[in-house]
Length: 397
Image (cartoon, rainbow, N blue to C red; front, side, top):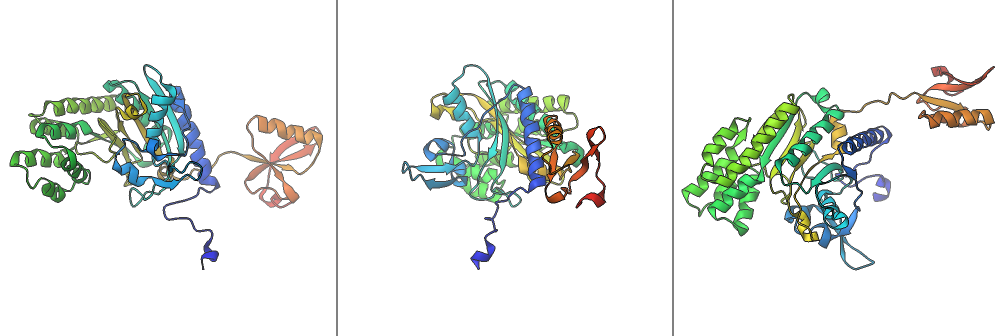
């Protein structure tokens, strides 16, 4: 039975056929070119690394998501990257070691041991941009601005209506726990409950806590909505000064987005902890109407580079290109392909060479059969080879 199903792929793993592959590649090139225009330099991290460098200090969630196997050469454990962001942080901290602000961008395949949602696959093609060496809120504002600009490049808003930017801040949660003296396993349990926005599980985690602790932490679950929710949050968290500072940063993001991207809706979620555990400050995600999962995610992740010898401020974002193309829909190519006779005519070969050099696609009609994508054909006339329309009836001539 198995021999009759050799074409089957593992659950959550897909392949891109020509039209979709061309769409993904065209979008990848356009987005990376835009990143370069903003000053972000392209890097290509390896697909596989030793797990003791790939996963060190990044939390259990990324560890579970990573596919691992033993390296026959060294005997050490290898991991296929599930997220490229930590690899770029290693490049910044160890391989480059530059002073000041460093801007990097990347694109590549990743592999997840299990899908992160019911709609997600296990092999995203991740494209992102990271900014290192600036702890100021201006760095976060830049990467959010760039992310929304790239979504405009992908025509997301034209196809789906308004983009919604979901903004949170891990610093609010961290400040509250520090203020309440909660740490260790108890903090991990509370993080998990808040991440899933499960009030029953949160109540179980706080079963031995006093009423004040329970009230403050329960309030985080309900602090979400439009920008006006910040007013309610300032009242609920008035006794936690560090949380108020984090709220100020969220407000600056709202003001920036409203000024630069007035058509983008902003949603505030102060229990937004859906990212990986390495996030340390502002976190954000972009959503589209009719798409249940985020098409882009990002946030601040200071000090990830410390395990590689340099503690650096860091912020950035990432897309799954395959999900982005699926959201955009399949776009048909507008390029007019030219069919050329299968001939060794020197003049014809020179014409074909010149056409390809100018960016035109020329396909040889092997066996006298024109490629069905061709709408024009090279024909020899009195003045040499010239392009003429290819009639449907001529396809197999």
